[in-house]
Image 1 (cartoon, helix red, strand yellow):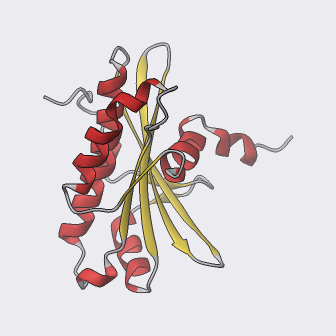
Image 2: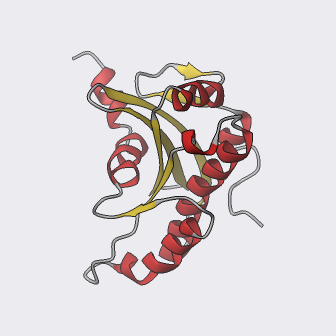
Length: 175
């Protein structure tokens, strides 16, 4: 049983936004077109606990080398009390589930399906997440996707972190 609360799963409803605050009504078609043009997709999820719940933000970063890229994100919520392992597992699963869905739904040749999954865990033993890196990375790699972990997992540790903390909204506010 998923710890995500019913009715709070925006990804299942197709609710995606750009960092500029524009809702994307069909993010999957947009990403498929960008992949067909030779872009690479990176997927990462980060979570933050609030007073009432745990918020998960999954981001899709579509790179256009030398010219930047595009970022799309979605939010989902779960009960706030979860262990570090459960939080990291949920982050990884949300990213992997999206990668699997894209891989299955996109009508593209295999060589154009360049989808990387980022895991927000650090192999450095100074961090608690180091105990789970092999298991989480193995889950992604075993599903057939290239995987990046910290410090290389920029999509999860920087872009998703930026979105989950609403830093992009502070940039849009005049003042």
